[in-house]
Image (cartoon, rainbow, N blue to C red):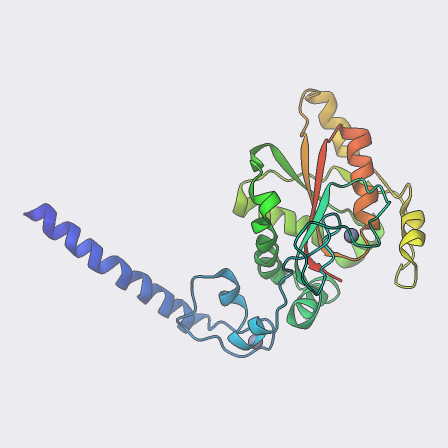
Amino acid sequence: MLEIIKAASAALCQPLLRAAGNFSLNMVYPRTCLGCGLLIEAQSSGQAMELWLCTYCRAQLNPIEPPFCDCCGEPFSGKMDSSFLCPNCQGRQLAFDYAISAYKAEGPLRELIHGFKYNRDLALRGVLTDAIALAFQEPRLKSENLSDWLLVPVPLHWSRQLYRGFNQSWELCRQLSKQAGIPAKALLRRSRRTPRQVRLSRNQRLENMRGVFAPSHGHWLSQHINPQKHWPNVLLIDDVLTTGATAHECARVLRAHFGVQKVVVITAARA
Ligand SMILES: [Zn+2]
Ligand SMILES: [Zn+2]
């Protein structure tokens, strides 16, 4: 009898305590929308993005849905029954297997990325990691067993990282690693600075990025300590994918120097 009363009181009390906890948390730290700054109603829970963005801002997000290019993930507006390659990827051998971006780089997501990178608002890494989580629902990636995969960030040149105070890709990797239990390792370094690529064509960007990345110094040290340790598959993480030239060059070095066999590029947004 006592057991039944205990079980019944636990079943009743736990949701109440949880609700009270959420309520008090919202009283102490009222959540504001990271997109527009308005207060988010206290009962917001469940979907991760609901904790960060208000209803209005969430409606402005544009998730990338099929059809999109099988290689670079460029979305295509129209109907397409079979898999396809966009004109940029046709006849081109890119070093990564495929790229998936969660959202189009517009609206509130673009502002969040801007705030994260250029206003150095490190607190935004949580919402951007939750944005990236959507890319993991892509059927090809969902069918993978991610237990022997490694998260690798796109590196910044040391001088840019010193100026910004952090590497946004590494921060996203660390957060994803905590949430998904996939190890993260900064295997690459950027050996020279690259000029801004905004006005360059895709071919010019590919040329511009050639030889920019190299194995990080830390890797050689760990290889001597533990030469057997290697990862066959890498999830290359970045905030935005534009033409894929940076991801291509990173993937090329990962294959050439680390024996990586599969590289999938995951970004929060697609420019
Ligand atoms: Zn909002
Ligand atoms: Zn493509």
